[in-house]
Image (cartoon, rainbow, N blue to C red; front, side, top):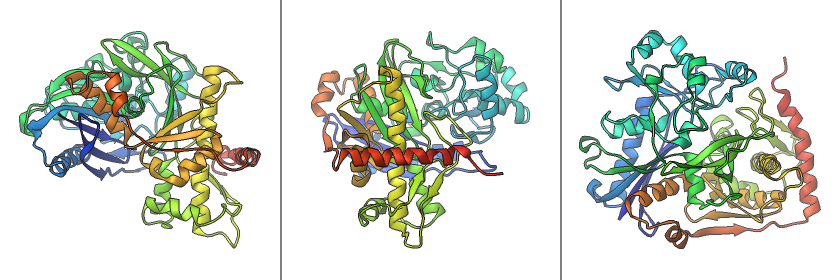
Length: 489
């Protein structure tokens, strides 16, 4: 039995196929192009996203020497809160997708938050409001019921079913700031405040469960679509962080830290978000999520912006080629500062450069900065969950592309003072949504079987002098003020 997982992230889309033993049997990946038409804006082409998704699906099937009819299920995991609007009749997008990191409506989000609505700059709500107000004819057509709104999951399922199904799940819906936290539907109050017609909204279905079948003319076979999940929630499921108090970090474009809070919604005093992890038979599990807005994006910047590396895989060996950063320090905040600062205007800061600084020192400082920001956000989450004297768990599971970087994993363990474990498959988002789809279609009988097939990819224990590690972290934290100041006038 085989499960196809489509994982459409912010910077790329991959398709991975797993068998009933959780073994990867085929896969493919392609980057997604983004546009930055103005400072703070970030857009993507919905047609390009769909084309890339289908391209990697076809390549993954070829890689696994499989035919579409051999698939038992399809699961779809995606970047969250990115806004797409398309014509109900034709499926044509009316404008580019506004990516979750886009800050054009950040001020409006602040206004609504001050009025008592739980709206953040990264959520979908004010981005959708902006589209209705600024795209020619959008308001009129939305009021007439001609337009569909969706996050990336809705867009992919719509296309996979040939335009027959318009849905999302609670894990994605909870990231839009448009969902009712106390039901499985949308908040009438928020929709009214933003003048968003309810007819635009997708139906909300369980995270795990057969939703529909793929259109034969699209995939080549009618295969059950049996799971939809936000990328971080899917990664959490892959890490089997199913019990209250379990935690993980996923390193993608950003680094996302999640702590399972059970069936209760818990609010944060430290810049974290309460979101739904998943829903089974209408029962939702919640978590608190902290955000390090710049993680993998900082490595991409080293490649695309500075040109000091040709491939992200170079960063680990380069960082290890020098004994330390040579006094260089980096606060990675290329897209602002997330948890606990929640400052969209924050900018990355680099200091300590001397005539003896090399690209190896800069690369090492960037990786060390990612580890320090991860600790900063994790400490904030632990304070929310357990109070100011909260103890760290003995082990943190880490996944995502950067989890394959041994230097980063070891530095993270040293910075946290706790063990860091990565799974054998670091692309945990795809594995998690495959698990969710496979559970719904009988590929796996239950969570106990998943635990039997889960395989570790290595454990990194903290090394070195603890006091020295703590001192380095505190010295780095003093530098964050430089990033909080933002650009100078």
